[in-house]
Image (cartoon, rainbow, N blue to C red; front, top):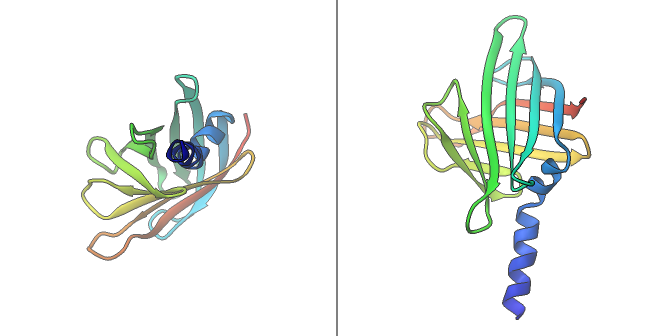
Length: 153
């Protein structure tokens, strides 16, 4: 009985981000910046699907100097083992890349062309941060772009 209780507590803690986003769908808008991206305006549409068992994130980044510089469609869901995963498709990556949560809000690329991770947080209700980290060599990933957006609709 004791191990069942521990498992339930662990799964609840692991899926907290999923539950919070599923409860706060809508369009989030804000600004971002980073080494690779430079300043940009971000728009992320959060949609709850399958009764909150997954959410989709449709992310666009636009800047005056580069125009539309990032388009991404991502699914956040829990795996069979209860760990959160991001399934990401975007212009910069071939196909779909799976990122697995290694600690709360930190998703490491399971496989991909370069070391990468995504850090996503909800520091308060209606606020979402979304950061891309990567390295073009074997070095540890560094933050390349980060958006902070607020729910507007």
